[in-house]
Length: 284
Image (cartoon, rainbow, N blue to C red; front, side):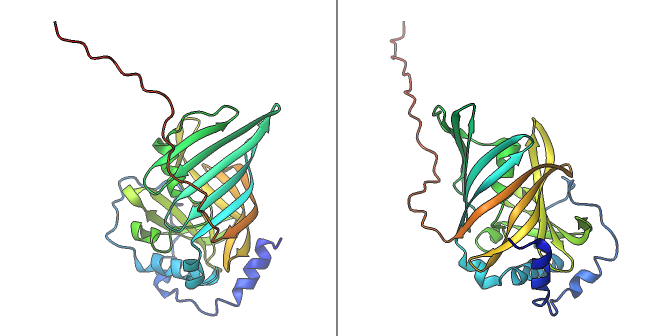
């Protein structure tokens, strides 16, 4: 597997000169990190020039806009470690914003499996093993985070892009490297933040508000390795951060693009629990 450093050097020759003059006036002063966006900050009418240019630069260095548009979906497998819990996962993300995430692991000899799904409109979850339970809506801060914080397909292309506007926030650092910070306002104004490396324009960190142990916290994803799949550069390792502290790690073992999803359903199954009906009674 290639290291991030080697991939940084590979993309250097791509960036002979990407238009960044709109950014220069912004980048003179170090801005506060975007981990805690101001909830009173109104949604802009449209994206500013600096944010738009950063996204264009990112698309160029990670394969080109046409290569990104050609990726209709990704199917990935790997492991996720959160604190002391280690699980396997299978992830599906589509260009129109659908997500299907299956976790499976074995504990004390018992197999566990559960799914988290967003079908484009509705978000739901279901425990499948060791005992199958009824599906239920997946909402609140956790559900909003699941819908808006993707691991591989970011909202920088249509049709997802149409739901977003972006606003440049200033400068910060990711693993000691200077980065431009952009805030995204998605559907229902769900906020996300994106860190683009100032030299290579790779997306090295992103995140949004989430919930852990019942408390709403900024939860981020920091790319640790990169590799090309289907002509597009994707992260193959991601550090999980909560309030800037390392909380876990994602390791992608397989990433495939444009897979046949005909056998995958994103829609919540109908409940099989019988509904008790009260027999109507005549009024006295």
